[in-house]
Structures are given as structure tokens and as C-alpha cells.
Image (cartoon, rainbow, N blue to C red):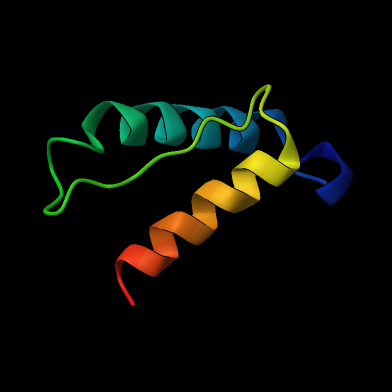
Length: 58
């Protein structure tokens, strides 16, 4: 985000939004919003999880 010239305030707002979205993802949406934790997950596993999610709704 810094490389895109986001200010510290904009970055913090985005972090706050993301945290709130994760809190409500399975409660406020029908069907529940799927989430994938990419923090330490290998990119090929993330891609596979995204593919599985897409194929459920095709």
C-alpha cells in the first residue's frame, strides 16, 4: 500500500475495514462470505481454494 502512496491513515482505515469484514463474514451474509487466510498459505493452495469456491457457484 505504501508503494501505491497510501497514507498511514488510509492503510489503518483499510486494516480496520478488513478486520470488521472478517468479524461479520459468516454472520451478516447469506450465504456466509468465504474467507481465505493468505498470511502463511502457499500461493498454489490459495489458488486451489479460490478455484473450489468458484466451482461451487458455477
